[in-house]
Length: 151
Image (cartoon, rainbow, N blue to C red; front, side, top):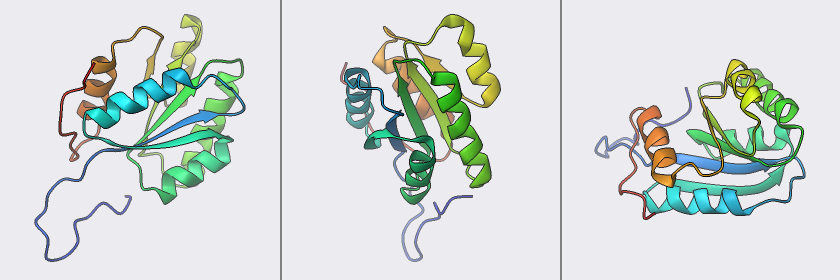
């Protein structure tokens, strides 16, 4: 398990949900990732925006930042290969307990394949922001987000 235990002498308060939002590969579409990042932040989550990173680097960043969630924003081809590489990297690094969600222009036919790789949920364009916030808040046990989304 990742190092989420409270420090000695402090009350055992749950810490805020930590999310790493990343665009794997070289995809230049950033707007969706930024909008979701702001909604998560407004809901009280800590969001680290990682920009564009290859799968190995984003897995390492997720471990270094001790995140609970990795949000992958994908709008160009290659999503199956990129997500497979991320999920394999998490297994190799013994960090498969990190919740992985995907958002972007994903063909409906590929959603079951992404979930078979270990993706918890796929959010398509037009998904209400409060639905994304609620999903993450409900699927990260023992952590908190402090507010409702502002959208």
